[in-house]
Length: 148
Image (cartoon, rainbow, N blue to C red; front, side, top):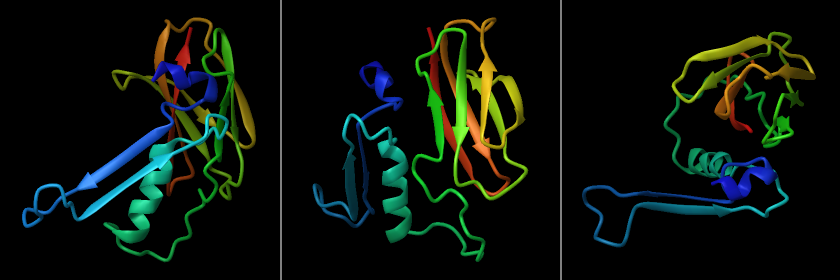
């Protein structure tokens, strides 16, 4: 939703509804929604995923601690941007944290290593939507960015 770009998020509201074949109409097994404040700079879908994972785990417990414990671990500003933007990461515990930037077709535009923050020159990019992926090798976080 372009109305949320000044907040640095794709939306302010997200929901999920899961029904089993045995559920009666209008009474799903799981329904949750998340609404964030306009200044929170938190993707509601990320918060919703954490809520779902706590109550309905689909993963095998490995004992490996998730190094992405803070919802604001990846901050990108300005967003939307014109010729450059800054990726800032906090609370990462791996020296091998990397980023990849892809266009909407999934083509790799840029990649590299990141420690605290990195300025990305986007002067030659076409206007449009891109995705910044940040990973420490265990977990992946994705943020949507817009070049004006």
